[in-house]
Structures are given as structure tokens and as C-alpha cells.
Amino acid sequence: MGLEQTNKLYVWIAIGFILVLPLFYVDYGPKDNVELRKGIAVVRYMSAERQIKRSSFLAAYPEGTPEDFLNWMFSSMGVAEWPAYEGGLEFGPEEEAMIKKTGMPFIPAGLSLIAQEPDVERGRQVVVYANEEENSLVAEGYENPSEPPVIVKSWPFPELKGG
View 1: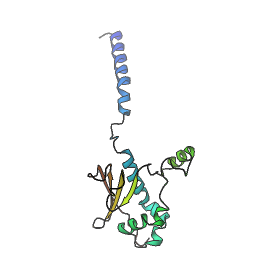
View 2 (view 1 turned 135 degrees about the horizontal axis):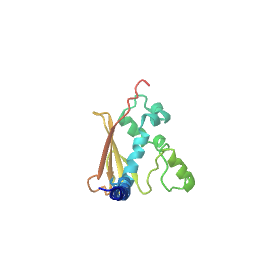
View 3 (view 1 turned 90 degrees about the vertical axis):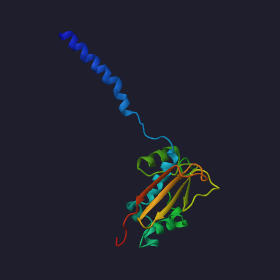
View 4 (view 1 turned 60 degrees about the horizontal axis):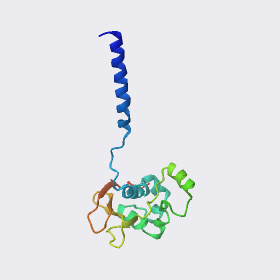
């Protein structure tokens, strides 16, 4: 193979690589249930040890079990500490964008956070309940509360006793 043919081969390899490279940046992850995933992310954010220690939760429930967390989260004290709703009237678009950059999630507009069981009167919702045996929280995402959940996530509740 001559020098000219070798150079042409390298050029074609480079062109092929350049044409294939964008495929590595395409997101093949599920695009379904984005709002439900964001709603679950809100509950995970609120139940993270760092957030719990900043909240009024431990003052109300010093022992801090998953069931206690749900009682607190859906009480007037806990609801007051929920993140804002996306596109709500609390913040302007610029403020909302800046807050999102800090990592604080927003509750998607039109999504309800519900404790224990689905509410058939509401539409899209995330239902949160405690699994005391596994010391965890479970969140189920419903597009339609009359049908089975389309997404289910579970995560361990932080060990808070004595600290």
C-alpha cells in the first residue's frame, strides 16, 4: 500500500469516527414519566439525611423513623418546607433557573404528592409510603391512579438516632 492510499485510508477512518461520535452523546434513557421521576426526586431530596437535619423533622420526631417522616412530610409543618412548584407564582423564570442550578428540585406543575395510597380524585401523582421492615421509603408514580403504578422506586431511610 502506497503512502497516498494510506493517507486516504486515515482520512476515511477520521470521517467515519466524526460521523459516529455524535451517537455517543444521544440520550437513549427513558423519556417517559419525566414529571413522575421529578416528583420522586423531590421526595428523595427531602428525605436525604442532609435535608432532614436542616428541617423541622427531628424537632418533631427525635427518633426519626420512615413512618414518622411521612407523618411530618404531609403535616402542615412539613408541607411548609416542600420545594416550590415548577412554574408557580413564587419565583420568576430567572430565579427558578438559578435555584435549579443549586440542585434543589421543583415539584412538577400538575403533579400531586400523596401519602400512603393513590387518590382517585387526582390525576398524575406520586404516592409515598414507608416500609418499616426495610427502614426505607417507597415512591410509586401513577399516570392514572385507577391503574397500576408506572414507576416504583425505593431507597433506605437515613439512620438518624443519636445524632
